[in-house]
Length: 164
Image (cartoon, rainbow, N blue to C red; front, side, top):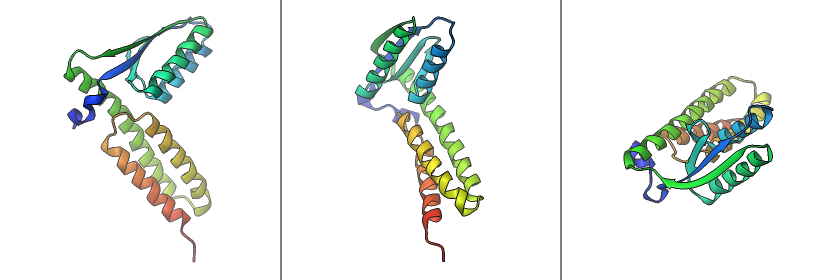
C-alpha cells in the first residue's frame, strides 16, 4: 500500500528551510500553525517539505515572505529524495498523520450521531468543514479518507431527511 502512495509524477518536493528569532514567539507560532494546516512534513528543525505543485510552492513562498517580515530567514528549495524507499517512507509518514485525523473525524461522527437533531445540523456543517480542511493537506490519501467522506455524507443525509 505504501508503494502505491508515491506516484511517478510526484517525485519532486518543495522544501522550506527557515529560521525565526525565539522572541517574540507569535511569528513562530503562526508559522507552525500554517505549516500544520498545509500538512507539511517536518524533516528537521526548520526544514519542512511538501510534494511539489503550484499550490504548495506558492504557499511556501508566502510563508517565506512572512518569515522575512518577522526578522527571520527562509529559503525555498526544489528537490528529489535520493531513493524511492526514502520517498515512500516520507509519503507513508504524511499519510499516517492524515489517517489519524480522519480517524478522529470518524470518532466525532459517532458522537454527533448520539446528539439530538438540532445540534446535529450544526455539527454536520462543522464536520464537513473539517473534512475539507483535512483533504486540503491529504497528498497521499489513506483508506480512512473514503471512510470519513462516506460517514460524514451518511450523517448529513440522515440529519437532512424530512421528519414525519
